[in-house]
Image (cartoon, rainbow, N blue to C red; front, side):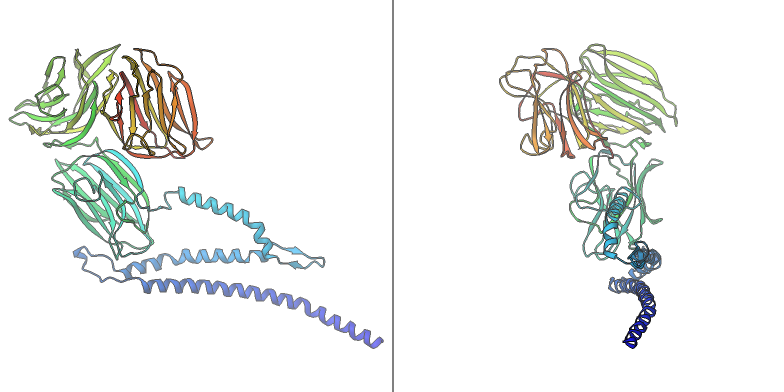
Length: 620
């Protein structure tokens, strides 16, 4: 019996002696396994890289003088040299996270031994990791340095006017190569191809390569293009496209990664209107690439040489209040009438509205002749003294309501008023064109800059059926409308329209009333509709009649409340809030026409004035 107890006691001592080394050995095995995993991860990563390199299609190297592209194997070498360091760091971080349960989550049992519970550790760390992940994703999305993935049919911006003096730059990082054309950015007046203004410019990636295909309107070609060398994958490349006036010429230049691809004169520079900026366009798949640092600068105020028959802008409605301002620098003389600027509803000098205003140099001089439609004279003009050669002169021409209802026509030269007279018969004109060098006269030998042409309805405008007051390229989620309306006639027994903003039709889909305003039948109560939440025709009726023959101010807006991160739609009558609601599904609209009034209803028997519509972009 004593021998048996002795034997058991000896066995226990042996087991205890072997227990701790066995555990340390297990830990050592775990650490060795982790090190093995690290090596395996790096090997797998390198194997994958090599496999990708082998799978990449290769292109032949061409002579550099022939504007060659880099071969695909050179592109891949650059990728392999630059990327592994970052990749190893990521693997190392992953290994540290794998080792965390061994060091950061130690619990002890009753005997004081460490208990490893990897599953429990993951559960405890999950909320923290998820929160960090969301934070990182938010930073990645909002940080322009990270770049943005291109998306098909994504409208980045809309521009009312696009002048021939512009600059565009961005960085692009191709991610992989596909066998078809893909789009990066596309500036267009409407379609993809086939007319001037549809690629001004447009940038694509060519099939089976990472080469850029960059196109624009140049000379008489609506699709003049150059191709770049192949861009390196997974690295950002710098692209710069610009056109600028230089000594009476417009030079078009393209650079990719510092290499000049084009430096050519555009002999027929053009102005374009209502430009959409796509990133990427709707006609091709989006390029498999990230884009960042996209800068767009339309330098409308640059120094432009005067060119014959250069249409720069149109106004669907040109109100009785207008202002034209510019700087003019004569560089020579022409032995005939030479035109600088001409605002016209159609012709040269046959009717009221053909010169509103027009500006010329007298033959063989630098004396200005400024003509306009005033009172009963369709060609009322004023002549300036001789302007200095090769020096800027500031010119301002405006017609504005002073007091109740008197229109004054004023000319100012170098901030000095030289003419101020009453126009007893002010008029509103439609479909007005602005020429910087008209089609009827020789262009002046001069440089024009800081040109601005604006029109406002401060003098009042009688509503007329089927008249577009303004084209709006883009309405943001946040916008503001204000106007004064005066009902002057008898009450009608049908709907009569005041204003109507629409992407196309009258009713039936989102965008057709954004907003729209009527007088309700048999009343002078306003009926105001807009797209709110899931209703494309959410309407509000004013409880009271607007006064007869007296202006009432109406403000309609959709504003972003930063504290609550939501959009509020609001209506004010005579600056008193009458209605408000949260719009939980605000939308952006494009190609909007503002009618005054629309073609689907009779026009309200009313005047409007001080019409303002602003689309207000903002960043959350």
